[in-house]
Amino acid sequence: MLKTMLLANTNCNLNCSYCFERNIKNHTAIVANDDKVYNFIQNIVNKVGYKNLSLEFTGGEPTLNMKFIENLVCKINSTYTTTLNLRYSMITNGTMLNDEILCFLNENLFSIQISLDGDKRSHDRERTSLAFGKTYDLITNNISNILKNYTNIGLKIRINLSKNNCKYIDLLLSDLEKLGWFEEHRDRIAIYYDFVDVPKHDFLYTTDTIILTEILPIYAKSISMGFKHEFKYINAGKCMIKSKNSITIHSNGDLYKCYSLVGYEDFIKDNIFECFCVDINKYDLLENLCLEDCEVKLLCHGGCAYRQYIAEGEIGINCRKPLLMSMNKLLYLAELHDIGVLSHKDQLEKFLIEEYAHVQINKIRA
Ligand code: SF4
Ligand code: SF4
Image (cartoon, rainbow, N blue to C red):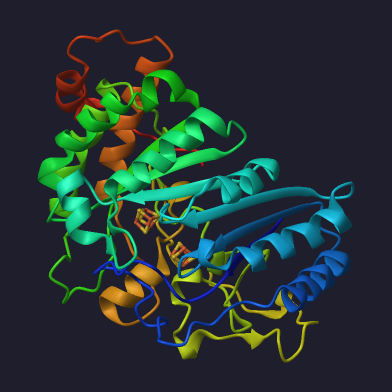
């Protein structure tokens, strides 16, 4: 499969303090060119003979450049619908999802990821927009609209945790429960929690020891309330820098192996606006740097090199083994509960916290 991440544009209608793209935001928004991107994709697909193509749109805020997305999807569909398995997805802040955009996403079977920054008060403090003001109600209403009216759209909700909001996640969970998302639509919506990645000098920087203390009870509560989760906690399992079939295209045509490194000039590989027939297989891949025979290696492969880069200033191993081991023990118990092997319905949260440490892991498969 060819996995392509595309920055539709560099502008955004929000201004989150922890945004990893602060280095590419500028006053003149850069907007992607669908003809040039299409020529590049067509060239690689035909040359390598891929059978599967995944296009993931991001930005900035990608919905601010729907023209690019619609034109590109239309061209790809008309060329490849019968010959390739096509998978479309988008990472969006969820503020702009009106019915016109949702009809398009629904028709093309998009999966979308939308983030919330904790409970309503924390979220609204972090995510205000000049156009909309506070955005918690706007985004949650848009998600409710998707769940009721756009049944082809897959939804993943990412809850961004930070030291500012992690103590108030109970408020968010009660709110989401009241919205009825998970009771009626449990199989369509997956929720996951993660701390925001920021450099060590940033006020929001949180060590893994603190992350573990905070995130375990949050997952235990969320699982016990019946929300649906992935049953594996992964650290860079499908890292693009380590795969020859992955590429990121900046809206200015620059190619990168990792989408988080967009804007860092040292990591630009080529520019497809200068030459569309670039061979992405010529790039050296980052080796699996970790040589340990580790129980969670298949969920990690040495961790996220970008995370190590922003923490220590160089690409390298980013080991989070204690966090990975603990989280996967907890999720294993949750999976057993989900398939009916364990029945602790009334006190599931307490059971998970008390028992997870007793799970023994030999080797986790990816
Ligand atoms: S280095 Fe990290 S952010 Fe970049 S592709 Fe790999 S896992 Fe993703
Ligand atoms: S968790 Fe640490 S030891 Fe295990 S594979 Fe990842 S980097 Fe290596």
